Amino acid sequence: MPKNHLKYWPKKIPTTLTVPETPLYDNLVVSARRYPHKTAIDYYGATLTYHQLWTQAESFAAYLQHQLNLKNGDRVLLYMQNTPQFVVAFHGVLRAGGVVVPLNPMNLTEELRFYIEDSDACVAVVGQELYERIAPLMSETGLRHIVVAAYSDYLSDHPDASLPDFVRAPRQTFTHTNTVLWTQAIPTSGTMGTTDPSGPSVAPVETTVEDLAVLPYTSGTTGVPKGCMHPHRTVQANTVGACTWFGTTADGVILAALPFFHVTGMVHGMLAPIYSGATMVLMTRWNRDTAGRLIERTHVTHWTNIATMVVDFLANPNLEAYDLSSLMVVGGGGAALPEAVGEKLYEKTGIRYAEGYGLSETIAQTHFNPIDRPILQCMGIPSFDVDARIVNPTTLEELGTNEEGEVIVHGPQVFNGYWKRSDENTTAFIEIEGKQFFRTGDIARYDEDGYFFMVDRVKRMINAAGFKVWPSEVESTLYKHPAVEQACVIGVADPRRGETVKAYIVLSAGSKGSVGAEDIMAWSHERMAAYKVPREIAFVDQLPMSGSGKILWRQLQADEQKQQGQAK
Image (cartoon, rainbow, N blue to C red):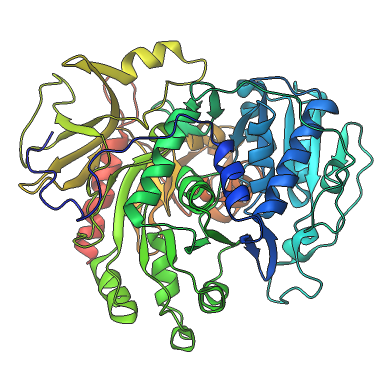
Protein backbone atom coordinates (compact mmCIF):
# COMPACT_ATOMS: atom_id res chain seq x y z
CA MET A 1 0.00 0.00 0.00
CA PRO A 2 1.42 3.43 -0.90
CA LYS A 3 2.50 5.36 2.18
CA ASN A 4 1.21 8.65 0.82
CA HIS A 5 -2.19 7.52 -0.49
CA LEU A 6 -3.98 9.97 1.85
CA LYS A 7 -1.88 12.97 0.81
CA TYR A 8 -4.55 14.26 -1.58
CA TRP A 9 -7.58 12.67 0.04
CA PRO A 10 -10.55 15.04 -0.48
CA LYS A 11 -11.04 17.55 2.32
CA LYS A 12 -14.04 17.06 4.64
CA ILE A 13 -14.51 13.43 3.53
CA PRO A 14 -13.78 10.64 6.04
CA THR A 15 -11.11 8.09 5.14
CA THR A 16 -13.20 5.21 6.45
CA LEU A 17 -16.90 4.46 6.15
CA THR A 18 -19.41 2.77 8.40
CA VAL A 19 -21.64 0.89 5.97
CA PRO A 20 -25.26 0.16 6.94
CA GLU A 21 -25.80 -3.44 7.97
CA THR A 22 -29.06 -3.57 6.06
CA PRO A 23 -30.02 -5.14 2.71
CA LEU A 24 -30.08 -3.03 -0.45
CA TYR A 25 -33.87 -2.97 -0.59
CA ASP A 26 -33.96 -1.02 2.65
CA ASN A 27 -32.41 1.92 0.82
CA LEU A 28 -35.55 2.22 -1.32
CA VAL A 29 -37.81 1.81 1.70
CA VAL A 30 -36.03 4.61 3.55
CA SER A 31 -36.01 7.01 0.60
CA ALA A 32 -39.68 6.30 -0.15
CA ARG A 33 -40.55 7.11 3.47
CA ARG A 34 -38.40 10.25 3.50
CA TYR A 35 -39.27 11.59 0.04
CA PRO A 36 -42.56 9.97 -1.03
CA HIS A 37 -43.53 12.68 -3.51
CA LYS A 38 -40.06 13.40 -4.85
CA THR A 39 -39.21 12.28 -8.39
CA ALA A 40 -37.16 9.09 -8.28
CA ILE A 41 -37.10 8.49 -12.04
CA ASP A 42 -37.39 10.89 -14.94
CA TYR A 43 -37.88 8.83 -18.09
CA TYR A 44 -37.82 11.19 -21.06
CA GLY A 45 -40.23 13.52 -19.29
CA ALA A 46 -42.47 10.95 -17.61
CA THR A 47 -41.84 10.67 -13.87
CA LEU A 48 -42.12 8.12 -11.09
CA THR A 49 -42.06 9.23 -7.45
CA TYR A 50 -40.25 7.34 -4.72
CA HIS A 51 -43.57 6.19 -3.30
CA GLN A 52 -44.66 4.88 -6.68
CA LEU A 53 -41.31 3.15 -7.24
CA TRP A 54 -41.56 1.47 -3.85
CA THR A 55 -45.16 0.31 -4.33
CA GLN A 56 -44.36 -1.11 -7.76
CA ALA A 57 -41.33 -2.97 -6.38
CA GLU A 58 -43.54 -4.39 -3.61
CA SER A 59 -46.14 -5.43 -6.17
CA PHE A 60 -43.59 -7.13 -8.39
CA ALA A 61 -42.06 -8.95 -5.42
CA ALA A 62 -45.50 -10.25 -4.48
CA TYR A 63 -46.06 -11.43 -8.05
CA LEU A 64 -42.73 -13.27 -8.06
CA GLN A 65 -43.59 -15.01 -4.80
CA HIS A 66 -47.24 -15.85 -5.31
CA GLN A 67 -47.50 -16.36 -9.06
CA LEU A 68 -44.02 -17.49 -10.13
CA ASN A 69 -43.16 -19.33 -6.92
CA LEU A 70 -39.81 -17.58 -6.48
CA LYS A 71 -37.90 -18.87 -3.47
CA ASN A 72 -35.13 -17.34 -1.41
CA GLY A 73 -31.88 -17.42 -3.37
CA ASP A 74 -33.49 -18.11 -6.77
CA ARG A 75 -31.79 -16.31 -9.64
CA VAL A 76 -33.71 -13.91 -11.89
CA LEU A 77 -32.32 -12.60 -15.18
CA LEU A 78 -32.74 -8.91 -16.02
CA TYR A 79 -32.32 -8.78 -19.78
CA MET A 80 -33.36 -5.29 -20.81
CA GLN A 81 -32.20 -1.74 -21.38
CA ASN A 82 -32.17 1.15 -18.89
CA THR A 83 -35.86 1.66 -18.11
CA PRO A 84 -38.07 2.16 -15.05
CA GLN A 85 -38.92 -1.56 -15.29
CA PHE A 86 -35.28 -2.45 -14.70
CA VAL A 87 -35.21 -0.42 -11.47
CA VAL A 88 -38.53 -1.83 -10.28
CA ALA A 89 -37.62 -5.42 -11.17
CA PHE A 90 -34.16 -5.16 -9.57
CA HIS A 91 -35.63 -4.12 -6.25
CA GLY A 92 -38.63 -6.40 -6.55
CA VAL A 93 -36.35 -9.41 -6.96
CA LEU A 94 -34.35 -8.43 -3.87
CA ARG A 95 -37.54 -7.81 -1.88
CA ALA A 96 -38.75 -11.30 -2.73
CA GLY A 97 -35.45 -12.81 -1.58
CA GLY A 98 -34.11 -13.50 -5.07
CA VAL A 99 -30.76 -12.81 -6.71
CA VAL A 100 -30.42 -10.42 -9.65
CA VAL A 101 -28.48 -11.65 -12.69
CA PRO A 102 -28.02 -8.59 -14.93
CA LEU A 103 -27.32 -9.40 -18.58
CA ASN A 104 -26.04 -7.36 -21.49
CA PRO A 105 -28.98 -6.77 -23.87
CA MET A 106 -26.58 -7.27 -26.77
CA ASN A 107 -26.28 -10.99 -25.98
CA LEU A 108 -27.80 -13.39 -28.50
CA THR A 109 -29.56 -16.71 -28.05
CA GLU A 110 -26.58 -19.03 -27.67
CA GLU A 111 -24.87 -16.62 -25.30
CA LEU A 112 -28.07 -16.43 -23.25
CA ARG A 113 -28.18 -20.21 -23.06
CA PHE A 114 -24.90 -20.24 -21.17
CA TYR A 115 -26.01 -17.63 -18.62
CA ILE A 116 -29.31 -19.38 -17.97
CA GLU A 117 -27.70 -22.77 -17.52
CA ASP A 118 -24.75 -21.53 -15.49
CA SER A 119 -26.81 -19.40 -13.10
CA ASP A 120 -29.73 -21.87 -12.98
CA ALA A 121 -32.05 -18.91 -13.49
CA CYS A 122 -35.74 -19.73 -13.29
CA VAL A 123 -37.28 -16.35 -14.22
CA ALA A 124 -36.31 -13.64 -16.72
CA VAL A 125 -37.55 -10.08 -17.06
CA VAL A 126 -37.07 -9.14 -20.69
CA GLY A 127 -37.47 -6.10 -22.90
CA GLN A 128 -40.01 -6.95 -25.61
CA GLU A 129 -37.52 -6.15 -28.38
CA LEU A 130 -35.30 -8.94 -26.99
CA TYR A 131 -38.01 -11.54 -26.41
CA GLU A 132 -37.49 -13.57 -29.58
CA ARG A 133 -33.86 -14.18 -28.61
CA ILE A 134 -34.68 -15.81 -25.29
CA ALA A 135 -38.07 -17.41 -26.00
CA PRO A 136 -36.65 -20.56 -27.68
CA LEU A 137 -34.68 -21.34 -24.52
CA MET A 138 -37.82 -21.79 -22.43
CA SER A 139 -38.17 -25.36 -23.64
CA GLU A 140 -34.45 -26.13 -23.65
CA THR A 141 -33.26 -24.85 -20.26
CA GLY A 142 -34.48 -24.53 -16.69
CA LEU A 143 -36.00 -21.12 -17.40
CA ARG A 144 -39.63 -21.38 -16.27
CA HIS A 145 -41.13 -17.92 -16.69
CA ILE A 146 -40.59 -14.76 -18.73
CA VAL A 147 -42.02 -11.34 -17.90
CA VAL A 148 -41.98 -9.08 -20.98
CA ALA A 149 -41.67 -5.32 -20.59
CA ALA A 150 -42.67 -2.69 -23.17
CA TYR A 151 -40.64 0.44 -22.55
CA SER A 152 -43.37 2.65 -24.02
CA ASP A 153 -45.59 1.80 -21.04
CA TYR A 154 -43.48 4.21 -19.00
CA LEU A 155 -43.35 7.04 -21.54
CA SER A 156 -45.53 10.13 -21.52
CA ASP A 157 -48.58 10.33 -23.79
CA HIS A 158 -46.55 12.34 -26.30
CA PRO A 159 -43.05 10.86 -26.32
CA ASP A 160 -40.11 12.55 -28.00
CA ALA A 161 -40.13 11.60 -31.69
CA SER A 162 -36.33 11.31 -31.64
CA LEU A 163 -36.45 8.30 -29.33
CA PRO A 164 -35.49 4.96 -30.92
CA ASP A 165 -38.33 2.98 -32.44
CA PHE A 166 -37.91 0.09 -30.00
CA VAL A 167 -38.43 2.49 -27.08
CA ARG A 168 -41.60 4.04 -28.54
CA ALA A 169 -42.96 0.72 -29.85
CA PRO A 170 -46.43 -0.05 -28.47
CA ARG A 171 -46.94 -2.99 -26.18
CA GLN A 172 -47.15 -6.33 -27.99
CA THR A 173 -49.05 -9.43 -26.95
CA PHE A 174 -47.46 -12.84 -26.51
CA THR A 175 -49.29 -16.14 -26.37
CA HIS A 176 -46.39 -18.40 -25.40
CA THR A 177 -46.88 -20.53 -22.31
CA ASN A 178 -45.45 -19.05 -19.11
CA THR A 179 -44.94 -15.66 -20.73
CA VAL A 180 -46.70 -12.68 -19.16
CA LEU A 181 -46.69 -8.96 -19.77
CA TRP A 182 -45.22 -6.52 -17.28
CA THR A 183 -48.62 -4.86 -16.98
CA GLN A 184 -50.10 -8.21 -15.91
CA ALA A 185 -47.42 -8.63 -13.26
CA ILE A 186 -47.93 -5.08 -11.93
CA PRO A 187 -51.49 -3.86 -12.50
CA THR A 188 -51.61 -0.13 -11.77
CA SER A 189 -54.02 2.74 -12.00
CA GLY A 190 -51.99 4.19 -14.86
CA THR A 191 -48.64 2.52 -15.50
CA MET A 192 -46.64 5.34 -13.92
CA GLY A 193 -49.07 5.43 -11.01
CA THR A 194 -49.51 3.52 -7.77
CA THR A 195 -50.11 -0.22 -7.85
CA ASP A 196 -53.47 -1.76 -7.09
CA PRO A 197 -53.65 -2.03 -3.28
CA SER A 198 -56.04 -4.99 -3.49
CA GLY A 199 -53.27 -7.28 -4.79
CA PRO A 200 -51.48 -9.85 -2.60
CA SER A 201 -48.83 -8.58 -0.22
CA VAL A 202 -45.23 -9.76 -0.05
CA ALA A 203 -44.55 -12.65 2.28
CA PRO A 204 -41.94 -11.91 4.96
CA VAL A 205 -38.37 -12.58 3.86
CA GLU A 206 -35.40 -12.73 6.18
CA THR A 207 -32.55 -11.17 4.23
CA THR A 208 -29.16 -10.41 5.75
CA VAL A 209 -26.23 -8.45 4.36
CA GLU A 210 -24.42 -11.74 3.80
CA ASP A 211 -27.11 -13.13 1.49
CA LEU A 212 -26.37 -13.10 -2.23
CA ALA A 213 -27.85 -10.04 -3.95
CA VAL A 214 -26.31 -9.67 -7.41
CA LEU A 215 -24.55 -12.08 -9.77
CA PRO A 216 -22.93 -10.00 -12.53
CA TYR A 217 -20.92 -11.97 -15.06
CA THR A 218 -17.39 -11.27 -16.13
CA SER A 219 -15.00 -13.21 -18.35
CA GLY A 220 -12.10 -15.25 -17.09
CA THR A 221 -8.71 -15.90 -18.62
CA THR A 222 -10.21 -18.81 -20.55
CA GLY A 223 -12.89 -16.57 -22.04
CA VAL A 224 -15.69 -18.42 -20.23
CA PRO A 225 -17.98 -15.94 -18.42
CA LYS A 226 -18.01 -16.25 -14.64
CA GLY A 227 -20.61 -15.07 -12.16
CA CYS A 228 -19.29 -12.78 -9.43
CA MET A 229 -21.01 -13.50 -6.13
CA HIS A 230 -21.89 -10.22 -4.46
CA PRO A 231 -23.84 -10.21 -1.20
CA HIS A 232 -25.76 -7.13 -0.10
CA ARG A 233 -22.76 -6.15 2.03
CA THR A 234 -20.31 -5.62 -0.86
CA VAL A 235 -22.80 -3.77 -3.05
CA GLN A 236 -23.86 -1.57 -0.15
CA ALA A 237 -20.22 -0.65 0.52
CA ASN A 238 -19.70 0.81 -2.96
CA THR A 239 -23.16 2.38 -3.04
CA VAL A 240 -22.44 4.36 0.13
CA GLY A 241 -18.90 5.01 -1.04
CA ALA A 242 -20.08 6.50 -4.34
CA CYS A 243 -22.51 8.86 -2.58
CA THR A 244 -19.91 9.98 -0.06
CA TRP A 245 -17.09 10.54 -2.55
CA PHE A 246 -19.16 12.49 -5.06
CA GLY A 247 -21.33 14.33 -2.55
CA THR A 248 -24.60 12.89 -3.83
CA THR A 249 -27.60 14.13 -1.85
CA ALA A 250 -31.38 14.13 -2.19
CA ASP A 251 -31.02 17.27 -4.30
CA GLY A 252 -28.78 15.53 -6.81
CA VAL A 253 -29.89 14.74 -10.36
CA ILE A 254 -28.01 11.83 -11.91
CA LEU A 255 -27.83 11.17 -15.64
CA ALA A 256 -28.07 7.38 -15.87
CA ALA A 257 -26.53 6.88 -19.31
CA LEU A 258 -24.36 3.86 -18.50
CA PRO A 259 -26.25 0.56 -18.80
CA PHE A 260 -27.55 -0.83 -15.53
CA PHE A 261 -26.36 -4.35 -16.37
CA HIS A 262 -22.82 -2.97 -16.03
CA VAL A 263 -21.64 -2.69 -12.41
CA THR A 264 -20.62 0.97 -12.76
CA GLY A 265 -23.98 1.95 -14.22
CA MET A 266 -25.77 -0.16 -11.62
CA VAL A 267 -24.01 1.43 -8.64
CA HIS A 268 -23.59 5.03 -9.81
CA GLY A 269 -26.67 5.38 -12.01
CA MET A 270 -29.24 3.48 -9.93
CA LEU A 271 -28.24 2.36 -6.44
CA ALA A 272 -26.42 5.50 -5.31
CA PRO A 273 -29.30 7.81 -6.30
CA ILE A 274 -31.79 5.60 -4.47
CA TYR A 275 -29.61 5.50 -1.34
CA SER A 276 -29.39 9.31 -1.28
CA GLY A 277 -32.92 10.04 -2.52
CA ALA A 278 -31.66 11.72 -5.68
CA THR A 279 -33.39 11.73 -9.08
CA MET A 280 -32.36 9.33 -11.83
CA VAL A 281 -32.64 10.66 -15.38
CA LEU A 282 -32.74 7.47 -17.45
CA MET A 283 -31.38 7.03 -20.96
CA THR A 284 -32.34 3.79 -22.67
CA ARG A 285 -29.99 4.40 -25.59
CA TRP A 286 -27.07 6.82 -25.73
CA ASN A 287 -27.62 9.86 -27.93
CA ARG A 288 -25.50 12.96 -27.51
CA ASP A 289 -28.24 15.44 -28.45
CA THR A 290 -30.72 13.75 -26.15
CA ALA A 291 -28.13 13.84 -23.36
CA GLY A 292 -27.61 17.57 -23.89
CA ARG A 293 -31.35 18.23 -23.75
CA LEU A 294 -31.79 16.11 -20.62
CA ILE A 295 -28.93 17.81 -18.79
CA GLU A 296 -30.45 21.22 -19.55
CA ARG A 297 -34.08 20.33 -18.81
CA THR A 298 -33.57 18.32 -15.61
CA HIS A 299 -30.53 20.24 -14.32
CA VAL A 300 -28.32 17.17 -14.10
CA THR A 301 -25.64 17.50 -11.40
CA HIS A 302 -23.78 14.16 -11.67
CA TRP A 303 -22.85 12.16 -14.75
CA THR A 304 -20.86 8.93 -14.57
CA ASN A 305 -19.92 7.61 -18.00
CA ILE A 306 -17.23 6.02 -20.12
CA ALA A 307 -14.66 7.87 -22.18
CA THR A 308 -16.35 7.16 -25.51
CA MET A 309 -19.50 8.96 -24.36
CA VAL A 310 -17.52 12.08 -23.43
CA VAL A 311 -15.65 12.02 -26.74
CA ASP A 312 -18.92 11.78 -28.66
CA PHE A 313 -20.70 14.35 -26.48
CA LEU A 314 -17.98 16.98 -26.90
CA ALA A 315 -17.75 16.35 -30.65
CA ASN A 316 -21.38 17.38 -31.07
CA PRO A 317 -21.59 20.47 -33.33
CA ASN A 318 -24.76 21.45 -31.41
CA LEU A 319 -23.02 21.42 -28.03
CA GLU A 320 -23.14 25.20 -27.60
CA ALA A 321 -26.94 25.07 -27.78
CA TYR A 322 -27.20 23.27 -24.42
CA ASP A 323 -26.98 24.80 -20.96
CA LEU A 324 -24.58 22.55 -19.03
CA SER A 325 -24.15 24.86 -16.05
CA SER A 326 -25.90 22.50 -13.61
CA LEU A 327 -23.16 19.85 -13.92
CA MET A 328 -21.07 19.46 -10.79
CA VAL A 329 -19.34 16.09 -11.18
CA VAL A 330 -18.37 14.25 -14.37
CA GLY A 331 -16.31 11.07 -14.25
CA GLY A 332 -16.17 7.43 -15.12
CA GLY A 333 -14.02 4.51 -16.08
CA GLY A 334 -13.77 1.61 -18.51
CA ALA A 335 -11.02 3.30 -20.53
CA ALA A 336 -8.67 6.24 -20.08
CA LEU A 337 -9.96 9.62 -21.28
CA PRO A 338 -7.61 11.27 -23.80
CA GLU A 339 -5.96 14.36 -22.33
CA ALA A 340 -7.18 16.64 -25.12
CA VAL A 341 -10.77 15.56 -24.45
CA GLY A 342 -10.39 16.18 -20.75
CA GLU A 343 -9.15 19.68 -21.43
CA LYS A 344 -12.07 20.35 -23.78
CA LEU A 345 -14.50 19.19 -21.09
CA TYR A 346 -12.89 21.63 -18.66
CA GLU A 347 -13.14 24.48 -21.17
CA LYS A 348 -16.84 23.80 -21.75
CA THR A 349 -17.94 23.08 -18.18
CA GLY A 350 -15.17 24.07 -15.76
CA ILE A 351 -15.17 20.44 -14.53
CA ARG A 352 -12.14 18.20 -14.33
CA TYR A 353 -12.93 14.62 -15.38
CA ALA A 354 -12.50 12.17 -12.48
CA GLU A 355 -11.58 8.66 -13.56
CA GLY A 356 -11.92 5.59 -11.41
CA TYR A 357 -10.98 1.94 -11.48
CA GLY A 358 -12.87 -1.20 -10.60
CA LEU A 359 -14.08 -4.57 -11.84
CA SER A 360 -17.16 -6.75 -11.78
CA GLU A 361 -15.43 -8.61 -8.96
CA THR A 362 -15.45 -5.40 -6.91
CA ILE A 363 -18.91 -4.19 -8.01
CA ALA A 364 -17.34 -1.04 -9.55
CA GLN A 365 -14.78 1.16 -7.81
CA THR A 366 -11.75 0.26 -5.75
CA HIS A 367 -9.99 3.49 -6.78
CA PHE A 368 -11.25 7.06 -7.21
CA ASN A 369 -9.60 10.22 -8.45
CA PRO A 370 -10.03 13.03 -5.90
CA ILE A 371 -12.59 15.50 -7.27
CA ASP A 372 -10.40 18.47 -6.36
CA ARG A 373 -7.20 16.96 -7.78
CA PRO A 374 -7.98 14.44 -10.52
CA ILE A 375 -5.31 13.20 -12.91
CA LEU A 376 -6.28 12.11 -16.41
CA GLN A 377 -5.43 8.58 -17.56
CA CYS A 378 -5.03 7.60 -13.93
CA MET A 379 -6.84 4.96 -11.86
CA GLY A 380 -6.90 7.23 -8.83
CA ILE A 381 -6.18 6.48 -5.18
CA PRO A 382 -7.59 3.55 -3.17
CA SER A 383 -11.18 4.08 -2.07
CA PHE A 384 -12.62 3.88 1.44
CA ASP A 385 -11.04 1.10 3.50
CA VAL A 386 -9.33 -0.41 0.43
CA ASP A 387 -5.83 -1.83 0.78
CA ALA A 388 -4.37 -1.88 -2.75
CA ARG A 389 -0.86 -3.13 -3.42
CA ILE A 390 1.44 -3.91 -6.33
CA VAL A 391 3.09 -7.33 -6.39
CA ASN A 392 5.28 -9.30 -8.72
CA PRO A 393 2.72 -11.42 -10.62
CA THR A 394 4.99 -14.47 -10.48
CA THR A 395 6.64 -14.34 -7.06
CA LEU A 396 3.90 -12.24 -5.39
CA GLU A 397 6.64 -10.16 -3.76
CA GLU A 398 5.31 -6.72 -2.82
CA LEU A 399 6.76 -3.91 -4.92
CA GLY A 400 7.29 -0.22 -4.21
CA THR A 401 6.87 3.23 -5.72
CA ASN A 402 6.93 3.31 -9.53
CA GLU A 403 7.58 -0.42 -9.76
CA GLU A 404 5.28 -2.19 -12.21
CA GLY A 405 3.38 -5.25 -11.09
CA GLU A 406 -0.05 -6.80 -10.58
CA VAL A 407 -2.71 -4.89 -8.66
CA ILE A 408 -4.18 -6.78 -5.71
CA VAL A 409 -7.00 -5.38 -3.59
CA HIS A 410 -8.54 -6.02 -0.19
CA GLY A 411 -11.68 -4.10 0.71
CA PRO A 412 -15.35 -4.20 1.71
CA GLN A 413 -16.51 -4.34 -1.93
CA VAL A 414 -14.51 -7.42 -2.96
CA PHE A 415 -16.77 -10.29 -4.02
CA ASN A 416 -17.15 -13.66 -2.31
CA GLY A 417 -15.79 -15.56 -5.29
CA TYR A 418 -16.89 -16.96 -8.64
CA TRP A 419 -20.20 -18.80 -8.92
CA LYS A 420 -19.61 -22.57 -9.17
CA ARG A 421 -15.87 -22.04 -9.83
CA SER A 422 -14.18 -23.39 -6.70
CA ASP A 423 -10.96 -24.22 -8.55
CA GLU A 424 -10.59 -20.68 -9.90
CA ASN A 425 -11.41 -19.19 -6.52
CA THR A 426 -8.30 -20.79 -5.05
CA THR A 427 -6.10 -18.91 -7.49
CA ALA A 428 -8.09 -15.66 -7.52
CA PHE A 429 -7.15 -14.77 -3.96
CA ILE A 430 -3.94 -14.63 -1.97
CA GLU A 431 -3.34 -13.96 1.70
CA ILE A 432 -0.91 -11.32 2.95
CA GLU A 433 -0.53 -10.29 6.59
CA GLY A 434 -3.73 -12.12 7.47
CA LYS A 435 -5.76 -10.30 4.78
CA GLN A 436 -7.34 -11.88 1.71
CA PHE A 437 -6.49 -9.99 -1.48
CA PHE A 438 -8.12 -10.37 -4.88
CA ARG A 439 -5.73 -10.67 -7.82
CA THR A 440 -7.05 -8.27 -10.47
CA GLY A 441 -4.77 -9.46 -13.27
CA ASP A 442 -4.00 -5.83 -14.15
CA ILE A 443 -0.48 -4.44 -14.29
CA ALA A 444 -0.03 -0.99 -12.77
CA ARG A 445 2.25 1.21 -10.69
CA TYR A 446 1.74 3.94 -8.11
CA ASP A 447 3.60 7.21 -7.78
CA GLU A 448 5.00 9.16 -4.82
CA ASP A 449 1.57 10.63 -4.09
CA GLY A 450 -0.24 7.30 -4.00
CA TYR A 451 -1.95 7.60 -7.39
CA PHE A 452 -2.22 4.35 -9.35
CA PHE A 453 -1.59 4.20 -13.11
CA MET A 454 -2.55 1.35 -15.43
CA VAL A 455 0.33 -0.13 -17.42
CA ASP A 456 -0.96 -3.29 -19.07
CA ARG A 457 -3.09 -6.34 -18.45
CA VAL A 458 -1.95 -9.75 -17.39
CA LYS A 459 -5.04 -11.22 -18.91
CA ARG A 460 -5.62 -11.27 -22.63
CA MET A 461 -8.60 -8.94 -22.66
CA ILE A 462 -9.78 -6.37 -25.21
CA ASN A 463 -11.47 -3.25 -23.82
CA ALA A 464 -13.82 -2.09 -26.58
CA ALA A 465 -15.54 1.12 -25.45
CA GLY A 466 -15.77 -0.23 -21.91
CA PHE A 467 -17.00 -3.70 -22.95
CA LYS A 468 -14.75 -6.62 -22.12
CA VAL A 469 -14.03 -8.90 -25.06
CA TRP A 470 -12.13 -12.12 -24.59
CA PRO A 471 -10.28 -13.22 -27.75
CA SER A 472 -10.60 -16.93 -27.03
CA GLU A 473 -14.39 -16.62 -26.87
CA VAL A 474 -14.50 -14.85 -30.25
CA GLU A 475 -12.06 -17.36 -31.71
CA SER A 476 -14.21 -20.26 -30.54
CA THR A 477 -17.15 -18.82 -32.47
CA LEU A 478 -15.10 -18.03 -35.59
CA TYR A 479 -13.89 -21.62 -35.72
CA LYS A 480 -17.51 -22.68 -36.25
CA HIS A 481 -17.54 -20.93 -39.62
CA PRO A 482 -17.14 -23.62 -42.32
CA ALA A 483 -14.57 -21.54 -44.22
CA VAL A 484 -12.34 -20.77 -41.22
CA GLU A 485 -9.36 -23.06 -40.79
CA GLN A 486 -7.53 -21.04 -38.15
CA ALA A 487 -8.28 -17.82 -36.28
CA CYS A 488 -6.45 -15.54 -33.88
CA VAL A 489 -8.05 -12.47 -32.31
CA ILE A 490 -6.22 -9.48 -30.86
CA GLY A 491 -7.08 -5.96 -29.76
CA VAL A 492 -6.00 -3.00 -31.84
CA ALA A 493 -6.07 0.71 -31.01
CA ASP A 494 -9.17 2.60 -32.05
CA PRO A 495 -9.54 6.39 -31.73
CA ARG A 496 -13.21 6.15 -30.72
CA ARG A 497 -13.55 2.86 -28.83
CA GLY A 498 -10.10 2.77 -27.23
CA GLU A 499 -9.61 -0.74 -28.57
CA THR A 500 -11.42 -2.79 -31.16
CA VAL A 501 -11.41 -6.43 -32.25
CA LYS A 502 -9.23 -7.66 -35.09
CA ALA A 503 -9.18 -11.23 -36.38
CA TYR A 504 -6.41 -12.91 -38.33
CA ILE A 505 -7.97 -15.74 -40.32
CA VAL A 506 -6.61 -18.61 -42.39
CA LEU A 507 -9.30 -19.77 -44.78
CA SER A 508 -9.74 -23.35 -45.88
CA ALA A 509 -8.32 -24.13 -49.31
CA GLY A 510 -11.70 -24.26 -51.03
CA SER A 511 -12.85 -20.94 -49.56
CA LYS A 512 -10.01 -18.64 -50.55
CA GLY A 513 -11.23 -15.96 -52.91
CA SER A 514 -14.89 -16.73 -52.33
CA VAL A 515 -15.26 -15.64 -48.69
CA GLY A 516 -14.57 -12.03 -47.80
CA ALA A 517 -14.33 -9.96 -44.63
CA GLU A 518 -17.92 -8.77 -45.01
CA ASP A 519 -19.11 -12.39 -45.10
CA ILE A 520 -17.28 -13.21 -41.86
CA MET A 521 -18.61 -10.09 -40.14
CA ALA A 522 -22.20 -10.71 -41.21
CA TRP A 523 -21.98 -14.32 -40.05
CA SER A 524 -20.48 -13.21 -36.73
CA HIS A 525 -23.24 -10.66 -36.12
CA GLU A 526 -25.74 -13.52 -36.09
CA ARG A 527 -23.83 -15.44 -33.44
CA MET A 528 -22.34 -12.98 -30.97
CA ALA A 529 -22.97 -9.59 -29.42
CA ALA A 530 -22.10 -6.68 -31.72
CA TYR A 531 -19.24 -5.40 -29.56
CA LYS A 532 -17.48 -8.78 -29.89
CA VAL A 533 -17.70 -8.94 -33.68
CA PRO A 534 -14.31 -8.31 -35.38
CA ARG A 535 -14.28 -4.90 -37.01
CA GLU A 536 -11.04 -5.65 -38.78
CA ILE A 537 -10.21 -8.92 -40.52
CA ALA A 538 -6.91 -9.89 -42.07
CA PHE A 539 -6.72 -13.01 -44.22
CA VAL A 540 -3.30 -14.67 -43.98
CA ASP A 541 -1.77 -17.83 -45.37
CA GLN A 542 -0.50 -18.95 -41.99
CA LEU A 543 -0.36 -17.86 -38.35
CA PRO A 544 2.84 -17.77 -36.28
CA MET A 545 3.20 -20.95 -34.23
CA SER A 546 5.32 -22.03 -31.28
CA GLY A 547 7.24 -25.27 -31.26
CA SER A 548 4.39 -26.90 -29.39
CA GLY A 549 1.85 -25.79 -32.00
CA LYS A 550 0.36 -22.85 -30.10
CA ILE A 551 -0.60 -19.75 -32.04
CA LEU A 552 1.66 -16.87 -31.00
CA TRP A 553 -0.95 -14.18 -30.46
CA ARG A 554 1.55 -11.97 -28.65
CA GLN A 555 3.66 -11.81 -31.79
CA LEU A 556 0.66 -10.66 -33.84
CA GLN A 557 -0.16 -8.11 -31.15
CA ALA A 558 3.40 -6.77 -31.16
CA ASP A 559 3.51 -6.61 -34.96
CA GLU A 560 0.22 -4.71 -35.01
CA GLN A 561 1.43 -2.20 -32.43
CA LYS A 562 4.66 -1.70 -34.36
CA GLN A 563 2.75 -1.04 -37.59
CA GLN A 564 0.45 1.43 -35.87
CA GLY A 565 3.45 3.18 -34.36
CA GLN A 566 5.06 3.55 -37.76
CA ALA A 567 1.83 4.85 -39.26
CA LYS A 568 1.66 7.77 -36.80
